[in-house]
Amino acid sequence: MMTRTRSSAVGAVAVLLAVVLLAAQGAHAAEAVSKEYQIKAAFLYNFAKFVEWPPASFADASSPIIIGVLGQNPFGGELEQVVKDRKINGRDVLIKTLETVEQAASVQIVFLAAGEDARIPKLLAAVSDKAVLTVGESDAFASQGGAIRFVLDGDKVRFRINLTPADRAHLKIGGQLQQLAKQVERSP
Image (cartoon, rainbow, N blue to C red; front, side, top):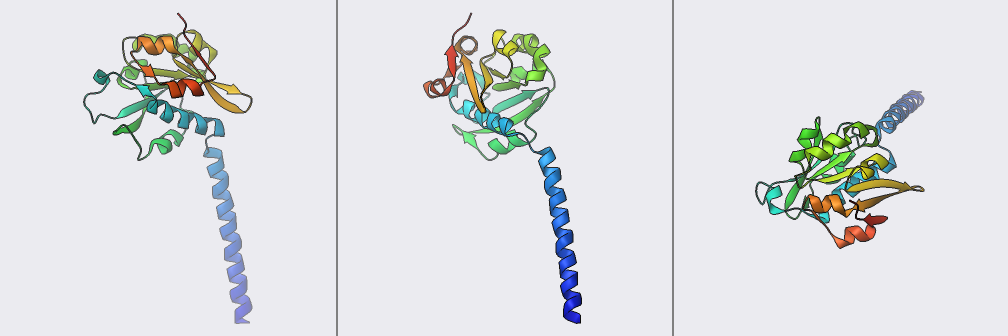
């Protein structure tokens, strides 16, 4: 008799535990970042590996590389996870949420999501004399002078590089990164 009661109790606990775990997984899935933005987060980190900034871009040799996300953040916490405990050329990599376009002048890479197109002219003006790599998602971003634009090629995330804005920002985009790009161009 005791065994049946104990067995029933263990079974009930197991069922309850399964329900709790399924509910937690469902909540986590709702908060999960899409595969597209997981890949874009990894790209942003890797862009920093293959771009050379002028020494004056950093206060000193130990200053971090800062990736700023202006406005809407489609990455959730994914970008922070990608850079966690990583260094590039001895520098920590930090993620910063930017509220204003003026704050973009204090980072090395700034990302602007597609829904933020109204901010493009002010953003590009704010970083026009700074060594900031601009990365966006929309056609408008590319046509108005952004340096790197993410594009979807079927179900793959790719990117296009416009070397002209990078040159103006005194950034050197490495040949390896250029080879990975879907397209590399120079536009006025």
